[in-house]
Length: 272
Image (cartoon, rainbow, N blue to C red; front, side, top):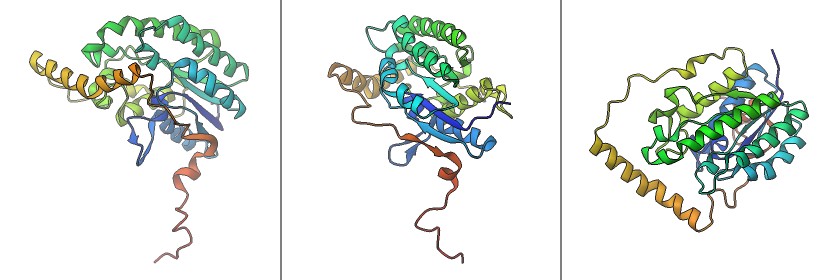
């Protein structure tokens, strides 16, 4: 079994953990969940998360790769490109070219790298149907690039459960807590971690009841007004949800200490 002691996560909002917690209480997310699982195997694991929401693939490449290499990880996850899918000028070759460059640089330094494929967003929201072809094109290129560089792929695309609304937050752009856990489990399984299995592929029960056409249309209109409109507004004004933000965990820190250390305000109090 391969043992990991230094895990670094690169990416955008999914890796940062948006949808799993909030900015007031703190974000968890797929990378935190994977780090906790790794730490159960290797208690001395150190973990850094360089991801920032809203970043495009070229920004993840330009802003996070050098910082990741400087941390000398033995394991890295690279998950980026979903924000690019939604842009008018999407170019699958260009986007995956940035992922390919990150895969090449990290594996050249002996890092074990893991990544994901993306679900068909049209099965999450019908309004996204026009970009289904983009998802297919990007996933094909991610698989090919990963094969070239020996990158581990958690191929989530074939499984219907990944588009179950119960795995997604209300904005339909970010996984919810259950979705982040399933992604972390998929990565653990792809990395062949002890105790990992393929239960993450199983459908949720009970199945969701079918929606009628009128209910579906009303739901789509509410989603467009609540989430799509503001997103388009940011695009038109050149703003990003990541403006002014920095990585939540830029340094390699012990996972076990972060989770289990006593609170500084109470550590020295005598027990009753």
